[in-house]
Length: 107
Image 1 (tube, rainbow, N blue to C red):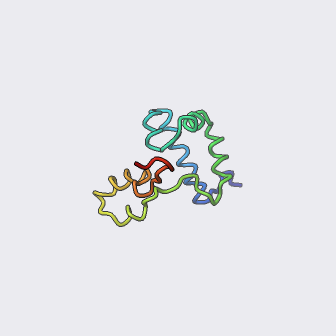
Image 2: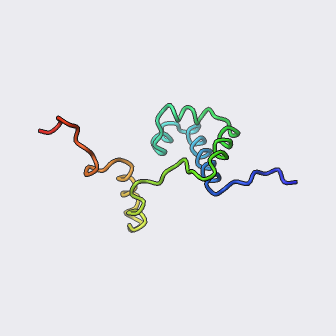
């Protein structure tokens, strides 16, 4: 009788992301917060969780990814490899054309 857990592709990716983020948080917290776009509270909670807790979270998400691709993934796929890193960095924040000016903030 096999005792290993069979994970869907999404569960496997979620678990690997969670474990990778946790390892990075434990080694270089500030770098991991920046790299994975985490808020400090979420970073602290992930760093403190056990591997079993992370596995349980991943197992209970069989078809839903916990992590979204960058907003400009389509542009990255079409870009020359040398330009992809710059486009990825630009895609991590809202672009100027997507930003909305708050009411009453105009000149």
